[in-house]
Image (cartoon, rainbow, N blue to C red; front, top):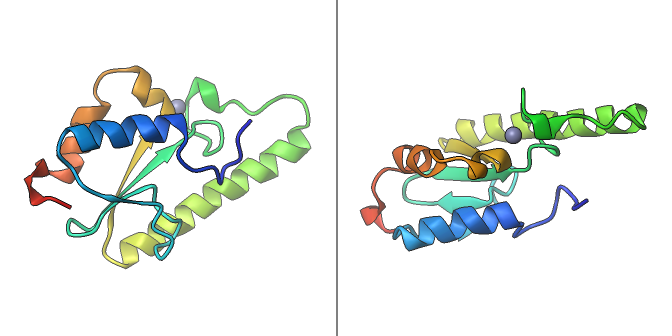
Length: 127
Ligand SMILES: [Zn+2]
């Protein structure tokens, strides 16, 4: 399984290429911001995270089930990830950023593009 730190994962590439094809321009993995958001729209002050359901414990998601084996290893590890997500989210919001999360499992269904566009606004603002 890939590490939580891995960049340019497949779900992320799917989201990025969709945005790019729709005319959005953005920066990726901006390390100067809390949590190094995956996709950043500077002028809009909007940050998008593409989260793997397992690593970020997507609530109520089938892909986010903790393995029964080695629970004592996985539970604290995954809970730390979630705590880190919350901390980063709060820090970003305190800096005036809006945040949207695209969950890996959402990419299997229609609707995630529309949600993203309604979060970002139309593509014309060009960043
Ligand atoms: Zn999910």
